[in-house]
Amino acid sequence: MDTRFEINIKKVWVKGDDRALYLFFDGKLALKLEYKDIGAAVKFLIKKANEQQLSSDGDITLPAITIKSEDKE
Image (cartoon, rainbow, N blue to C red; front, side, top):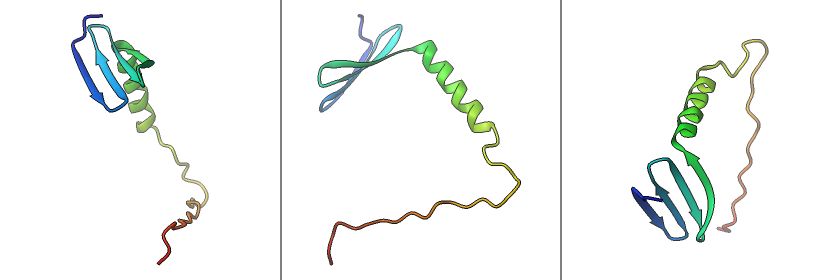
C-alpha cells in the first residue's frame, strides 16, 4: 500500500492510498472503503435526503423525550 495520507487519533487511524480509505481501530483493520464506493454512498444519501420523508396526511407528532440527570443538585 502506497500511503498518501495518514491520520492518527489515539486508537483510531485513517489511512488513504490511491484506491481506498482504511479505518483502523486498535491496530486492526475495521473498514475498507474504495473511493468508488464512497461516491455511490454519497449519491444514495443525497437521493434519500431529496425524497419527501413525511406524508402530508394525518397529524405528525414527535415522541416525548425524557432526559434523566445523573447530577444531584
